[in-house]
Length: 486
Image (cartoon, rainbow, N blue to C red; front, top):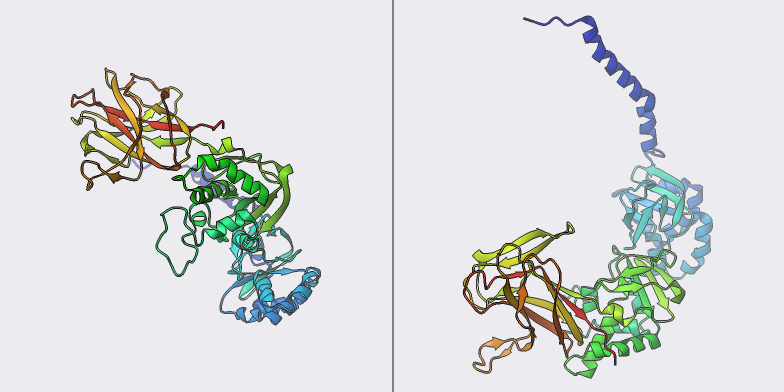
């Protein structure tokens, strides 16, 4: 039977829809929004609009004198940030007889495409025609406020700003200009000198490709990145290197050890965030996980750069003990096995009693006597290490044993057969029980590494083919370097 709708059943949704439409109209006038989105819009070319702007007259003189005005030919859209006349007058005299500096200055005020006033807290990085990247945030560009904004022409937009955007040096340019300072000179020397035999194929398009600092710590040439860099005065830098030499004994070669000591000091002086002196946190963490305590009272000078800040220290602030950070070996990330046991290898996800998830590796029922799992470690300091593991035996009803060995990373010819490469043993820990359901770290003992170098660590199972007895399991190994007392 067809249902007959009552009159009020039809009117109720209609009335609701009308109310919603009235509410939208009362809150927002689409013509007002259209006007705001096109504030200052005309069909005039951008150059003509700039010529009529009272506060752009001084900048326009520089624009024409540099020849950059020919770039604003209507074929592409640009945004011009125009400093007020008084700000241009303050710097124009220094540009009159330097065509290159004039060109760079003018281009540092022009960005490709149109960019409206950014009043949000989100930083937008604008690449200027100068090649510099400026931060555009909170109604400011590179710290200069807006006195007039969103003036749009047919082929672009301009804003009037309260300060000139002086092109700043990048960190790499600053370092190159201050190459008489020992710390900077060392980093620059890596353009020609490699610490390790890790040089990549030379690329004619990138002369600096083999600089290990740029490649491994931070490419300070990059205008799109942001850096904070601390510089020690020459005497302090030398003292820090000499203090650290006992930890970087490289094959008893004094020159190589000293160069590596310099690298170990400077690699923890660069951070991939930009902090002014006022905004520096109490502690920074370097790329190699070294905690760097910030003592603002030790900063004698700060220099703002296009891609960060340099802070000059009048004394060293990073204790040696801070640089001796723990090295972790994750069990689930081996480099290889002594034999293929893929079908018996399990990468597991477990949860500890505190509710934290972790990954580990378990190799079970593989029928291989003395099965070994190999792990490659980074370069390690020449000192003594305490070694721990966490190994969870949670699915077997018996205790089993395994052990850890430390070997030289680079292979040597075998004494029995020179054609077979072997890794010389540095230290072998004894077999240790893997107790049931033990989530705690277990201390294995200590060993001494006489030379600064990479090492190979090996987790080895019991010398038997019996299932359940030769199981291997590992969450992680932890190597804790010790501070030398003499």
